[in-house]
Length: 353
Ligand code: HEM
Image 1 (cartoon, rainbow, N blue to C red):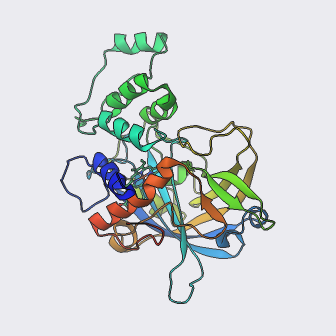
Image 2: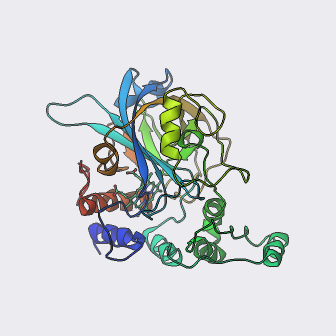
Image 3: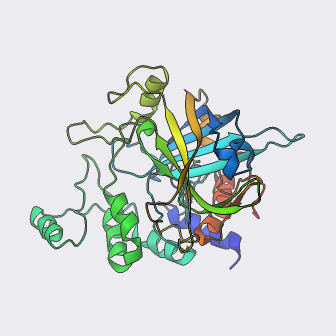
C-alpha cells in the first residue's frame, strides 16, 4: 500500500459516518480561529536555527479546537482539545513561508503505528451507544485498580467512544496511559487554561550544527484549570471566553490574564523513545523556554481564518526536522488528504499528495 493510500484509510477510519459529510474536519471539527504573535526567548536561538526562534515579533495564526468529530458543539463535555499554531515567516519571493506546530491536551498519543491506530479506531466508534456502569461496578473496578470508572453521560448524551477505548486499553497495556488520561480529561475552563503537547519528537539544529531530539509543549501562563462538578455544563462558552479575556474582561473563571502560552522544548536523551508518540520521556529532562505566544484577537472571519485553514505537522523550516515516528509520517499525507476533501486552503509543500 502506498503512503497516500494509508493516509486515506487513516482519515476514513476517523469518519463518524462513513461517506457522510466530508466538508469539515473528521476530528477537531469545532474550533476557533485566532490571531496573535510569538516572541522567541534569548535562549531559543542557541538551541535552534529555525527562523521563528531568532527573536523579533512573529505573526501567528492559530486554531483552538475540541477533539471530537461531531458537528454539534459541546464545549462543556469531556474531550481532548487542540491548539494548532502557524508561525508566519518572512516572505521569500512570492512564496508564503510558515511553520506549523500542532498540539493537544494529551501528553502522549494513543498508538505508535499505522496498524495499531487503525485497530484503535475500530474500537472507538463515537456513535457507540453510551455504556452506563452501576455504582457497584464502579466501586469494584476502583478497588481492584482495573480501570478508571466510566464517566456518567451528560444530559442528552447518547453515544460515546470511551467504553471502546477502555476495552482497547485492556488489550494494549502500552496505550493505557493516554486512554485513561483521555477518559478522564474533562473540560477546560478556557482554551487559555489548558496545556497542549506536540507529542512527536523533532530534531532541532543548533548554530554549531548540534542536532538534538526534542519535544514541544505549550504551558498556559494563567495555569491549567478544568471546570468542576459545581459548574453548569454549557455547550458554547470557549469562544466567548477567549473574546472576553482578550478584551481584559473576566470570562468564565476568575483570571484576568491575557491569553498567553510559554513554548517549552524538552531535550531527549539516549534511551528515550524518539519514534514512538505513545511513550513519554522521564520527567527530569532538560527543558528550555523557547518563547511566548500571545493571542491578540479572535479572527473576525471564522470561515477563512478557522474553518478553511489547514495545518500540517510537516510544515517545517530549516533547523527543525521530523523524526522517523510512523504516526508523524502518516499525518503528513492524512492532513493533506483531509484538507483537499473538505476544500481547505494552503497545501503542504512537503506533502506527496
Ligand atoms: C494517526 C494519527 C492521527 C491522524 C490520522 C490524525 C488525523 C487528523 C485529521 C484528518 C485532522 C483534520 C485535518 C484537516 O482537515 O485540516 C486532524 C486535526 C487535528 N489533529 Fe490530528 N491526527 C492524528 C494524530 C494527532 C496527534 C498526535 C495530534 C497532536 C499532536 C493531533 C492534533 C490535531 C489537531 C490539533 C488538529 C486540528 C487542527 C486544526 O485546527 O486545523 N493529531 N487530525
